[in-house]
Image (cartoon, rainbow, N blue to C red; front, side, top):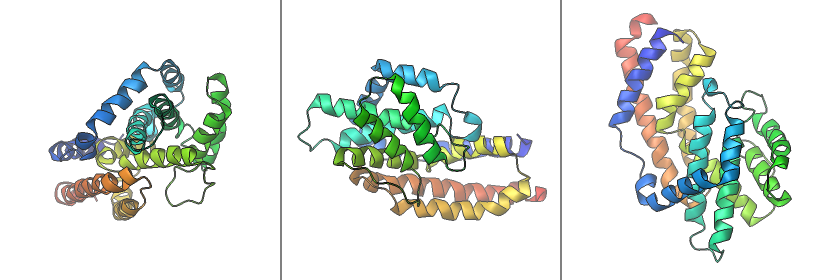
Length: 252
């Protein structure tokens, strides 16, 4: 990784540390904690996480650290979205495990050109070794196929499957906020290692793409809280660009 990116990553993390935490984590604190409790206590999830430790590569910005964050937030979204349903606590807990599994697996083939389609196929094969029903496996695989922004995909067939898909999508897009500038961007740069001038020239287009995510959230909770994640990310990105031109412009 070029030294300029190491330096910029440190500057970016300083900016991130000054930003407020998205309201989702305070307003939905009980659901966030319950999601973590389920994630850490369920034996199948622990087994799956251990299996993925060597499958997911953090050097591309979408490794196990990213997958765990998506899984935890997807579980919390499932809990919030299920509050007004007539479903039993046991059923809701099971759906949390289902969507957390989708979160762990959604980027299992991230480097593949069609990573959502390929990842869904790999996930389906892998989950044959676990205790999921065929319906649950189908919900997980379809959610993985549907988690990319602005791409046509096969919609889930049931309301329960739609909710799994939507919670996974929103939790994944939450990562386009502060996480993008504290971790993901730098992991991807470590992998690609582009010339600094090339990186800076593509930066504005990346910010425009980030802006487009604001209106794409799918769940009621995601539509309420997701845009703030993106706004925080945009503010970080704009400040970082000012730092680049002011303090690193001589490298261009």
